[in-house]
Length: 157
Picture 1 (cartoon, rainbow, N blue to C red):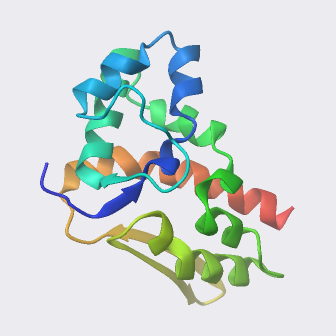
Picture 2: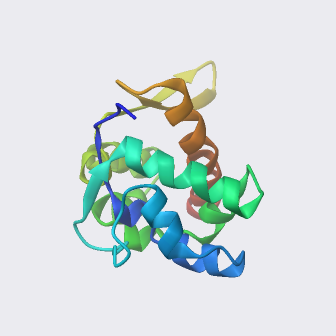
């Protein structure tokens, strides 16, 4: 657990509800990741990305579903992600929305590089973690991809 990039716990605001739906006790889950039992998933609480990844790995193990990040993404409310979530829906075009998210990402989590690459009429959204190990990227990427796909569909109509 060496990835010290700061991440707002608001990124997992949906965890308590999804854990309850899956009958996974939240307090032991939080304790296993080194978080307090009364941890809030809103506001300005910040933890290292490694701790958030440990929490997600333990949740996947306890729920018996390695793809639990998809359920978390489906339950996410962009407005609860602070400035980054609001920025994602602030533009007039899809490009403006993605650019606004990129500008505000550091408010939600550090150590993230976002790019929109366009070539020959096709666009690719790149989301990568700097100074992170492959396991941390793996545990987060599935949920991030699902969240972004849902957001892009909502923006595009």
